[in-house]
Length: 318
Image 1 (cartoon, rainbow, N blue to C red):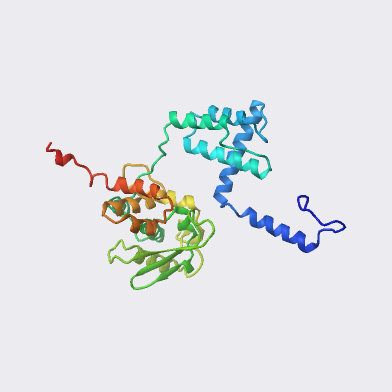
Image 2: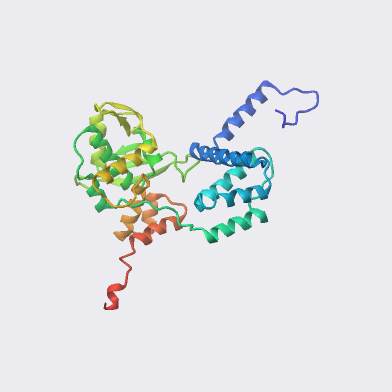
């Protein structure tokens, strides 16, 4: 209560103390758990470096931050260095220390790094429909394989992030003769939990995402709680899965199929956007499912998907 101005001759009431505690708890939820974890790791790295070099971390001089960025220019990507700078700034703001990432000494170093470093981010291979079919070709009818098949198909058809997949609850699903209405209660693009709804149609094929999800839920006996669960080697359904499990499942099936490329959980979302673009789907229809707020990010996948469609080599008469 030290930063509150209390009226003279008054002590803070129990209600006011409780209200401040509640406000602190609400403020602590302003950022997602993943963002907080990343900021904590970044700050730990920066403060350790400062300690080892005999420099002050908090508050840090602009020169200190510029030296830190320079010292790690060859070790980390530009994306990582940008996030580190954001984390350092956040730590200073939380400690009520002024910090301007645009101050001349820091800005010049960051601009110089952007010009000299490769800014292209690591891009995973998109799991497009032909590749997905090859990956799942060897799947069996064990419960674990049924879960993996449903997870991959729903993840690709819904352009879901891995965190969104493992957070799905049975109450988020509404099945109908047309398909499934799927509610994303919270996601990277919806930090305030307003909720986003997407539709996945029935395809009538053996790889229909909706039919495969229904079959998995029925066999696993899941009628409430998390949709995708851990399954032990004896076929027993366990607790919820971590988002890292999604990446491991995608890597497992693409690896077993001998697919070339670098795959991860993001390959499902990238596969949706790339395959939709290859199939000539309009940008706005793709965005309705991917829920991209930054359209330039989505357009990268659209350009990749349309790369050979727009190629003019055959028109050159070679």
